[in-house]
Amino acid sequence: MQEKPDWVTREREEIAARVASFRATQKKFEKEREEYYAATLSNAWDGFNKPFVWN
Image (tube, rainbow, N blue to C red; front, top):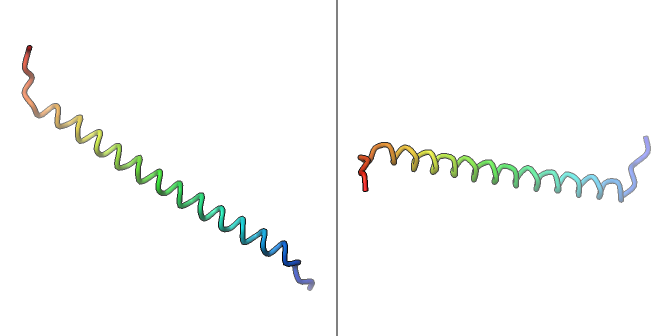
């Protein structure tokens, strides 16, 4: 069996690093979306608990 050239190994490592970085970024965005949703929903429900006052 032939060994792969060094450049192939380096390319694969670079691709793996980019994929890992992309996945980490996606996880970060997902967490931020969930936090924003929870905060927004919480604020919306807080508005229902306050009495309505006509001005």
